Image 1 (tube, rainbow, N blue to C red):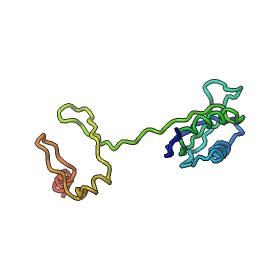
Image 2 (cartoon, rainbow, N blue to C red; image 1 turned 90 degrees about the horizontal axis):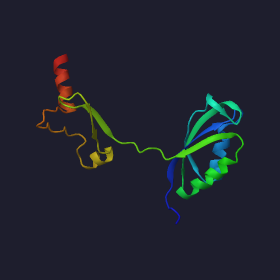
Image 3 (cartoon, one colour; image 1 turned 120 degrees about the horizontal axis):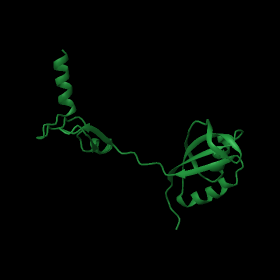
Image 4 (cartoon, helix red, strand yellow; image 1 turned 180 degrees about the horizontal axis):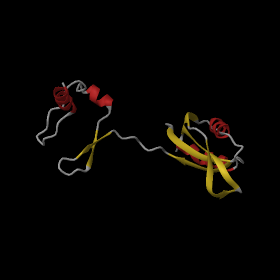
Length: 151
């Protein structure tokens, strides 16, 4: 069953010294994949030799593709002579998290924050958060108190 939506993937690769990232980018484009962003290419020393190479060029490219096309990409990458190694992953989903110190424990507590669009649609973007009974102070009250102390 073919997927109707493209997903984002990241391919990291090691190229032989003379290889360039254009090799990987061209292969992605020829395979019908859209390049979202390209990372910098860095010359690195390998921990152990790969195909008799002691150094390589490391890079990564973020692209979007249909999930069923990823296996075919792997088969094509295997036959590119300049590519020593490669790995295709799905980038982790970024979470909106607020980190703060827990009251009395000194440990860091993570609280999930809703996306900005959700806050704006609810009409609560400009309203200060009400103070809770647990003794926590919101950012607006804290800013007011700091201004009061510093002036």
